[in-house]
Image (cartoon, rainbow, N blue to C red; front, side):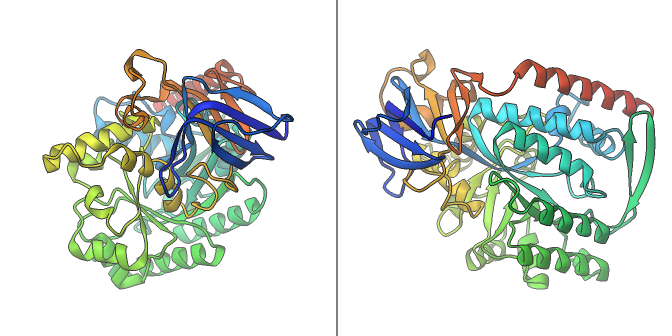
Length: 453
């Protein structure tokens, strides 16, 4: 790859502080960093060129809440309750390191093809199936993601301390059951953070912690675990992630633990109390809103209302049982979800939705100085979206067309850190069919083991 890349003749949606849009714009990239963004031509005779005529040039999309493993559990079970039961049992007893590697490659492939250049994933399917009993599974996931070239934050953490957690580790035909305590899981998390520090500038690790109720927080073991996880995240300077806040849980955890600060990311956040919202504003904790998630069926995240004083980003909660990594789909769904609730079609206008999926997502991950907008000095995470399509015509109001009508299949080119990962919807450095075949083998092996549990 040349050290310089010039994208020209496109509609450049910068998502910068002025929300500037250049109708015939150019973006110059040097050594993986955006060097210039401008209306018209940028002189750069030494650069490789991409003609973006008929396309929107925009920042890569940022998914602030998803799960590792889920791309290989789609289609399981007859309903969401059955899927959740099966998934927990599968992750605990029917997978091996090859599963995590194959699933990670498939997950990254889907993200590349729908324009998600950065995602924050929990390593497991909920608070009690975190595969941190040993480092090998996470190592396999991270190595596969590094090979695919996307940007990721992987959140690692302990299970609830209510009972012993047993995982079945498979090596070929041999299976060994391993019991692990939450405190032992935190040791594995610490070691993984240290091991991966500085290894790959596209990958970061974070600390996750189950969401505890006020009653649970009175338990001595729960209290100590929460304090230890909080302190580890602050010691290592990582993001602190929790999945599933609702109905007073933010205020309860803050009161007992002083748990949150500006590097905290709280997913779902449904049916919040006034005390919850006050804590978000006081601490600077960020919200990952997941309009397509199951929790958004049982309760509502007040995303439009929170946007006054709280950073609200978008997450897919991907990619099962009934959703995908398509952030364009989530932008559309977020608008309809809240417009219906508030009886106001003007809520969450296109630029607000695009912000939630780009620069607000970057803020939620404490990465706004690096990604989220097309500005000189930031990493060159860039999408080209093909707008010359019937569902995106006529050629007016590009922001509205992106937020209301586009989908992941409209992404023509995906660039991460200046590296072109996909062009003309074809992967540059990876064999898509090989990734699909590998994932199918891992899936079949998982199902065979599951039937023997």
